[in-house]
Image (cartoon, rainbow, N blue to C red; front, side, top):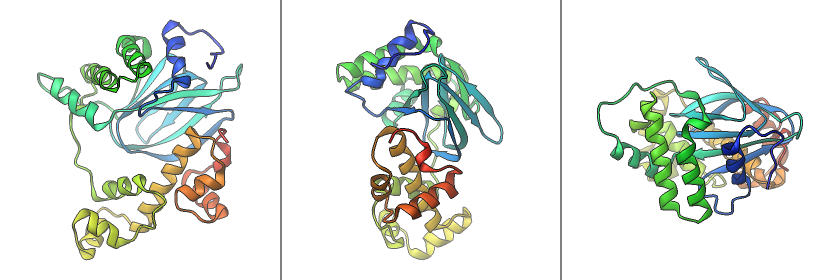
Length: 277
């Protein structure tokens, strides 16, 4: 088990076991041994992060957040963020658990909610971890037993609590734009040689309609494909120890040098700066 450099409290110690849980479900533990940051990172859907070691600095055009162990970092809707992850000075390790709020959890949350919709709230929020300890521990214990139904119910209970505290945008199912739908298709198969005709077939539209609708969103197909591939590459770099060449190949790059160049252009950092390899 990963040992925390300090002892912020029993709840954080219990949640630290997420780093070694064999029944991970959909969540991912992110580790790094060097300070690093990335610009304009696409967050495609609601999620939260539990800071276990180190610090996280997050910025958007409207918000700036500094997070430390004992904080829960909530993202309520699709957005882009600039982020810097800083390892703990004593252990030399950055560690956080990223938990997506999947479609099933959000649907259950909307079913459970009664009464008028609360305020939408900002897209990002820093919440006290201790205020949500009971459902978090229920979720962790359900994962340990491989009971994914109970785990999703615990997350739905947690999401209801988020909404009650003023983050009501979780209750509104957004209608994805064409660009978002294309990103999601590519994210599911980043190594595929995507062509316009593939999206036309998946989305049931003509090539002319595809081009016209993308133009109305001021988006280009080639840029969307590249953006989705690089986002999947970042996910792999954070959550696996795969060599860079393998990561590049999995997201559709035959040339490692081309992958490195595109990654740096997109995020303002070298892929080797992420310390999991």
